[in-house]
Image (tube, rainbow, N blue to C red; front, top):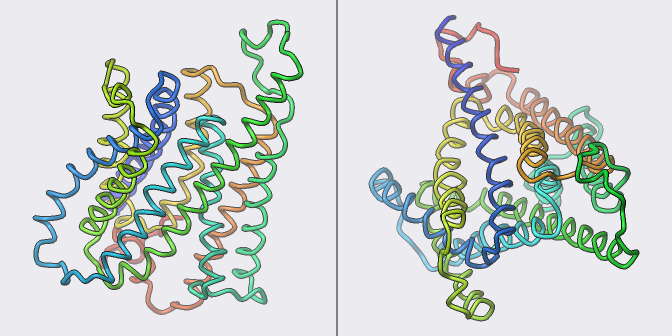
Length: 357
């Protein structure tokens, strides 16, 4: 029993560290944009670092697990990169440029619900609205979409009256209108980010069945994503001065994005999913939003508005309903095989121990 508790504590600490790394990436990316790092150069350097970190592990650890490559698989890797790297990271940076880290993190909580909608439309996900799990997934999806809509369309009054926000507002109506327009575009780009992320996860499922070694698959995805960003850069970022790292702040943001947000996060998330299961890992996702709110207020001086809070609450409620529906569905479909649904920390000698909630 003691060993089970220890494993649970390790898992919870690892999940908190994972969400802290994710939250830090939102803040670091915003700082990178604030100091003028190019929205194209930033992901290029990030994916170069990620590829250099992942490819050696993929080569040596999965040397005997890789199926033969075919042209069809390469095309699928290219499409995975287009969704999961190029569109995902591109829309994210555009959204972050116009919106804020808090909104970006809040919007990402809607990804499980969007993924469910896509998977259901493609008949990859079971949906039976006559059962409680089916109804929970539908209501959760509606709540998440509604929360994202509230964040996009409604700003509301400020909740944190910081010192620099208490000064008289001399902003003209034109400037206010421009800020609101930028915020709306930021939220729209973040919706595109969530859609591409969800599409990547849905499309990845059948590809993993054909090509199981995940590190190698991730390395190929990073490689093709890097190629795609370089093609975009050839047309968009032709000024060589924009490619030079001119300060320690720029170097730090790029290293954080490549080493922490890509390298450490991927390995840590894989370990957490292996130990606790995907549902338990996803439950900790809203913790990231809370951390981003605190860090953005302390580091960036961001203001928090009621519309963002209402939208975030709806998205989180929707997330938990979808996750509850998925968990209930698994219990209904595999009632006699707990080893397929329980985390690995519930070993055979501890099967009677209390499951992770």
